[in-house]
Image (cartoon, rainbow, N blue to C red):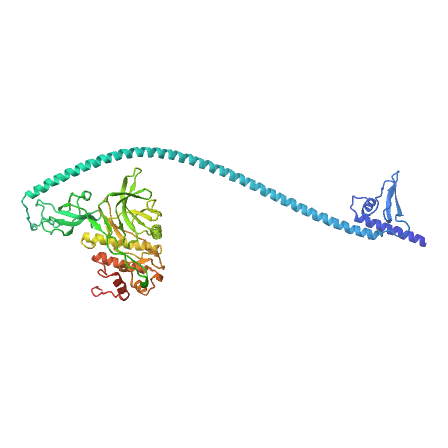
Length: 583
């Protein structure tokens, strides 16, 4: 009984072990074969013969007749030194689980890698498509550029042909000009001859000085200043055309001679002209009142002698230089033979010093390809102080780019280097004015009146407004910095602001000053030796504008007769006298 019980227990254990092993194996793997694969040692051939595997292992054999038998063998012998079956199976099971876990992780990693590769492939495909599109766009742009290049070449060839035609026409014009000059010389000689004959005839005739009183006839013209029955025609010398009261009207201002009622040399302003286009030297003009005047020599107007004072403390003050008296004239000076801007401009007349003595101004013309003057006369300002010239041009550009541009002189070109002729200087090419306002006033009765006064005041106000709108302080608003510009179409005049060299941004120190235009607070700062730390405010120009209005309305500066030092010392304690000002 004991043996059978033992045998029975062994069969039960063997069955349980086989069941356990069978449950741990994949369904597709034979039981004995799987067990043999999981155990170390020699493999077993399960098709007829057996080989040692492990102690106490049950395995099956198929005989030649196809019958399956289970046998139990102790492959490690009977010495008891074999490996425990259950311990070995437990270790193998753990290894199998770990292997399956590793395989699962590898499968996941492989799937993630495949997904990443697919994403990268999609991105590469998108980039290829995008690059193909960009390539097509580039090809189209290149095609357009080539077409534009061909068009530009065609235009260049047309321009070259036009230039050749223009050169031919210029040569013809030069020939005609030479012929016209010869004809003009002959006409001048003939006119001089006729004038001599007229003077001889006038000298031989009895001198008549008949003065007639104004007629009491109610039908007489109240604007007629003298009787038209006299044989002599009054002559206006140093004359200039000015705008009339109404739009489009032109009057003549000048010094009269041979007038029946007005002493010779008195300055008068005529009534509006009937034909403004006929106002020219040696021509007779008729006014709306019926008066006739012969226009003699046009006026020549020198500019003012006043000068700006360079800022410096009293202990650093240097003696002032004697300035060259500046002048400008409506008469056109002769060419000097010198050029500027590498031959682009032909200089004419003498170079004259500017008011402040830091630069020079000279008349110039544009040069044709043949070196001949063409176009209107211009003014060129040049100076060795390149920084100041650059600042002036930048100020012009800044105010021109603003919403309120003012009424400044027209600029044509800025030359940082004034060509090979003056490599150490800069130049600014501008519209040429007739004269500055200070020199213009004595020619029109000593002061501005009516439309001239209003136009000049508005021009100055617009210039100040434009500068302040771009946060600049003029710092040098005065009558010398406004010029009179003549309109060749109507014969009228207008005003333009010039010289923005001293303009500085608001709340920055000034670079120089004019005593007649500076306010009391700056004079006080200057006398205290703090001029270089003084901050400019817009009120500086407001004071200068007041001094400007006083001068153009009265014909004299508020501080005329005062030296620069006396003006500067008077201003800090200045109190205006308003006794005659009505409330």
